[in-house]
Length: 394
Ligand code: BEZ
Image (cartoon, rainbow, N blue to C red; front, side, top):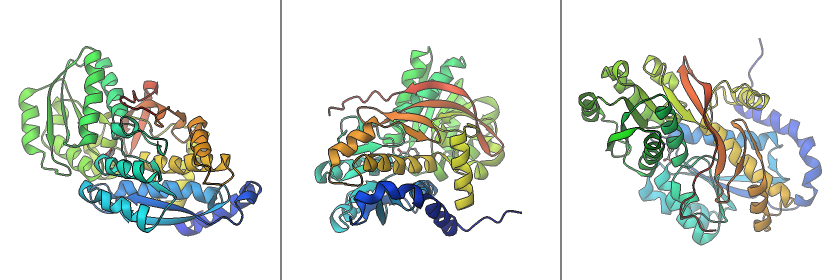
C-alpha cells in the first residue's frame, strides 16, 4: 500500500520537484526580499473550515512552484478575522500597517471583505479575494489593486435561478442570512427566475450566523411554494439542510441553492443532502486532467478532498504567480503586474477562465446533484457567465 506523506512532508516534496523548473525564471528575483503575503481568513466560527481550505489551496500552488513565486520567497502573516465585520477594519490594518504586507489574500465573509476593500483602496495594498462574493467589490468599489479569484454573489444566484426556471417551477420562496452574501445571492436568483417566468413569493431571512430555522421552516410549510432557494454555507449550511429534512419539507418542496449549500459539508449532512440540486463554478467529477491532478495532490498533501474553497485559494496563488512572473518578481511594477493578471487565462481545476475588466472571474456555472459524498456535475446551468459589474468605474 502507498504510504501517504504527512502534509508538511508532501508540500516539501512538491516544492523540491518544482524547484528545478522555476530556477530559470528566478534569476532576476535573486537578492529581492521575501514577498510578504497577509492571509486574512476565518480560523474560528461557522466559516472556519472554509478558511482552512483556502489557505491549503494557496499553499499547495506555492509548493508546486518550489515554495517561491516568480523566484520570490513567500513570507506569511496571518490574521483570524472570525467572520466578524465589526473587527474587520482593525484586523486588516494589522496586516497593512503593522506587518506592512505586499499583498493580502482574504476573505470568506462578504461583510468583512467590504471593510477590507475600503481599507486597501486607501492604502493601495494589493488585495486578492479568494471567496467573499460581495457584489460591490467588483462593482462600485472596484479598483486596480483589487482582484477576485472566486465569484460575485450575483453569479451563482443567477445561475441557480436559470436552473429553477428551466425545471418549470413557477413560485419560489428564498431563505438566507441577512447580510450582503445572502441578499445579493437571492437577488441574482430572483432576477433569472423571474426572467424565466417564475415569481418569488417571499424572501425569508435571519441574522448571520444564527441557525434557529424552525419558525421560518413553518412559514415555508404553510405557503407551499414550488421550490425553495437557500444561500447558507459552512456550519450553517449543515444545520439548515438537516433541519429542512427533519421538518419533512425535503419530500414535499424541492430545495435548491447556490452550491455553497452542499460544498465541503456533505460528510456532516449525510442522508439529508442526497439528491439536492445546486449550481456553482466547481463540481465533483469534472474529470479533466487538470482537476484530477489537483485533486490527487490536494488529497495526498492534506488527507482531505478539496472543495470549491480550496480551488479558489489555489487560483488566488495562480493569479498572483501569473502577475509576478510577468514582471520577473519585481513587485514595484504594480501596473504591469495587474495588467498581466487581467490578460491571463487562469488554468483552474474548475476549468479555464479569464478576469473581467472589473477583475472578477468570467466562468461556467455547473449543475450539480448530490450523490453520496459528491456534488456530481450533471450539466452546465450557464456557460461563461460574467458578473454585470454594476457601478464599477475603473
Ligand atoms: C460570502 O460571505 O460572500 C460567502 C460566504 C461563504 C460562502 C460563499 C460566500
